[in-house]
Amino acid sequence: MEISALTRSVVKSSHALICPDGHVNSVVPGWTNCTINVLINEQMGARLCQTLITMKAESIVSGSTAASQIFFYVMQGNCIANGTPLSAGQFVYFPPGETYQFEQASAGTQLLTFHKVYEPLEGYPTPTILFGDSAHIPGPAFLGDPALRLQVLLPEDLSFDMAVNIFTYDPGGHLPFVETHIMEHGLLYLQGQGVYMLDHQWYPVKKGDAIWMAPYCQQWFTAMGKEPAVYIYYKNVNRFPTTI
Ligand code: UGY
Ligand code: MN
Image 1 (cartoon, rainbow, N blue to C red):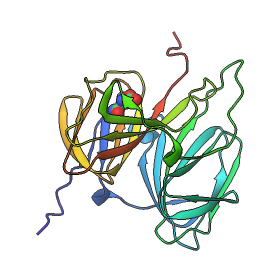
Image 2 (image 1 turned 45 degrees about the vertical axis):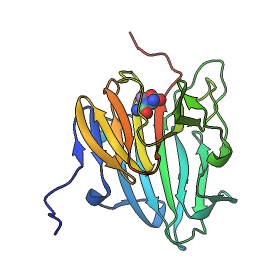
Image 3 (image 1 turned 120 degrees about the vertical axis):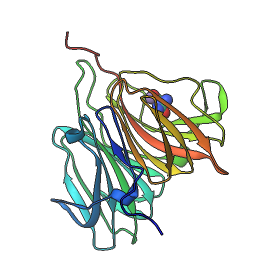
Image 4 (image 1 turned 30 degrees about the horizontal axis):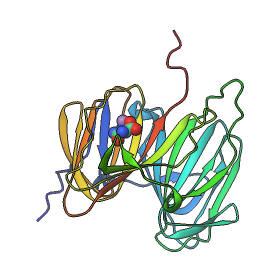
């Protein structure tokens, strides 16, 4: 028998692990007939927002990006985004000041969103709407280790102040060192399992789990089990590091 008083989820000042057993639905104006879970937001101390939207045929996800950009990734199912069909593994990025509408979803379609306030950079244009497909993005070995593959979904161009990457680890593959960096992460496991070290605490993690890592949260991961572990993650990039 499962004990309902137990969970793997934790929320701390430098990181959080949010597992599906703790999800409680939110109502979001403009996102109608959907199940919505806000996995990460600024009330945790984060500077990004990450949500999971589960749609049905009647669902409409519409709105405008105002000051923030939003990246939508189709985790499963299919739908129409601003008139363009999207299916699992495909994505669309909306810069600030755009309107979006997702509709005609197959039942159970899941969208993952990453939101960040856009920081313009003098001399560089604000990005435009971008559709893409992770199946067409190469996954070269990460830092020379063929057990780790990194796909970079958004252009590596100074116009963008956020990155979204998909990281695949073969079983036994692991980050080559403990990362200690200014960039923040929000992530969601798409497949597999493993153990994440966050600020010297060890967490078993698996498909469906979300993690927030604040700037300078120390991080290391190793994949376990019989299939590769895959996560999609957000990172803030390409801007001056200080106001000092
Ligand atoms: O891009 C990154 O910083 C990445 N290597 N971090 C991570 O997967 N925790
Ligand atoms: Mn990192």
